[in-house]
Image (cartoon, rainbow, N blue to C red; front, side, top):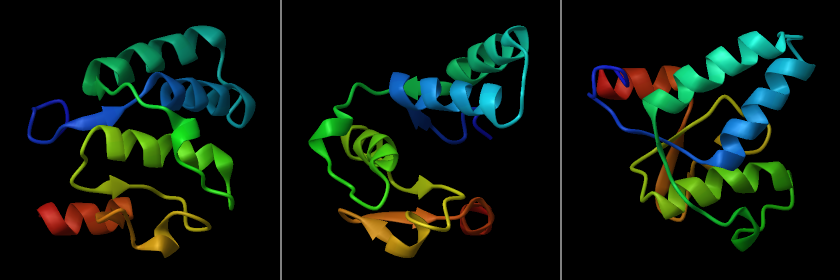
Length: 108
């Protein structure tokens, strides 16, 4: 859907950098695989300039990146698999927070 232009995927340089770190560390992807994936992901996203330090999120300060991106990009929804910190919020500053499955059901 993102590739077809049916939805706009918002991200930021900070989020893309974090994704690359996770791919290296958690999934042990090679640098070449991370670079290819990052380039593909970047091509699907609308990059938003935001200040993750402008939003404090004490339970997990790294999640501030996601919240700041959503606010700066005027997102309609935040889609996340973070069951520990983000999904329990249900919304942030009026922006609904949904799991990927709930988002797909909603746009169904």
